[in-house]
Image 1 (tube, one colour):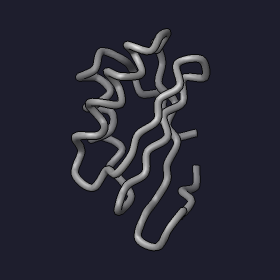
Image 2 (cartoon, helix red, strand yellow):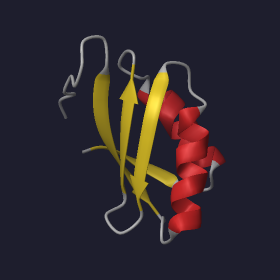
Image 3 (cartoon, one colour):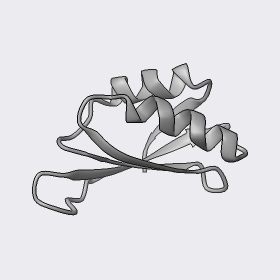
Image 4 (spheres, helix red, strand yellow):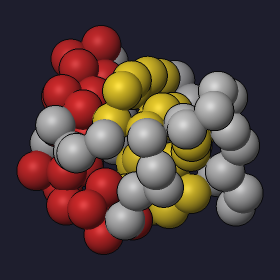
Length: 79
């Protein structure tokens, strides 16, 4: 459960999301998370259920959970 820093000032976190099964699912989850303040990129992969998020600072997990819930899926937590 550690975040890794890719470039100065950015933090990468990987989350596990339950229920994604297709590209539409990936887009829904990515779209909701990308609206969170400070998020610069989101990559969701339905086949693994993993969502990689790059942000300016560590994100509040409850905010990520709310965004995933809004997309219709369940956040299992950080990988």
